[in-house]
Length: 298
Image (cartoon, rainbow, N blue to C red; front, side, top):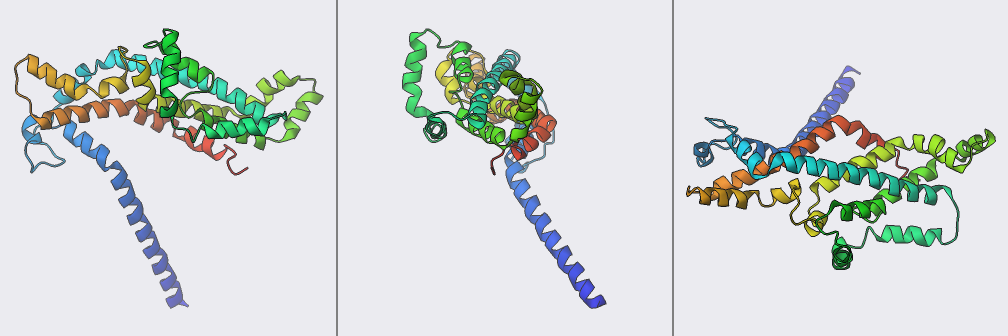
């Protein structure tokens, strides 16, 4: 009996070690590019050109991050991007919640067809409609104006709108009918029931939609490069931080090395994703709980 118990414990220990090894290996594979960026950004030029110094640095410095901060016009770009992403998230929550609520709680003609069109927006690449969309806003003189992008979010026609409408529709479908019936018995109308009974139950999903919209708009380059030409945004400045640094050094008549330009690109990437890492660390529970309660299994 003791021998059998020892074998079971040994088997469990072996499985735990194998599982831990696999998890650590996968995490390292995912985090390796980020760790490499951190290591490169804090290197001095001498250590950067020394092939024997992979992750460590004899003389760590913050000069590269400071230069990248300057090249990206970070302060102005950060606040412009944060404001644009916040408004985009709020407008997206409003539009997607209204559409998702109507599809999840009401029955009307052609609802299945409309819902099918919503799902089709997940299949159609945005590049297909980029030209007519650009011409439409160009004729309205809204190019290089945040209003153009915010209108797409307010009407539920922007980045990943179909996905959010689907998640909210499934969530509202999963809410019990008894909630509405109890509210109607207490004398609440449809609007009062929606705002004071149904939407409070969907707050986690609405927070999730806001966070996903914020993150995806922060990292988006397709819409921002199409609608904005002379607007200071982090995603746009990140794409030219290397060339901006090269031109800066050229104007000063100082030599540049491809490794230094690559280091500047890594520093810009680190400054770009750092706010998103902080947001994820703070709001991680909302991501998890919102997806768990999205009603996808319904």
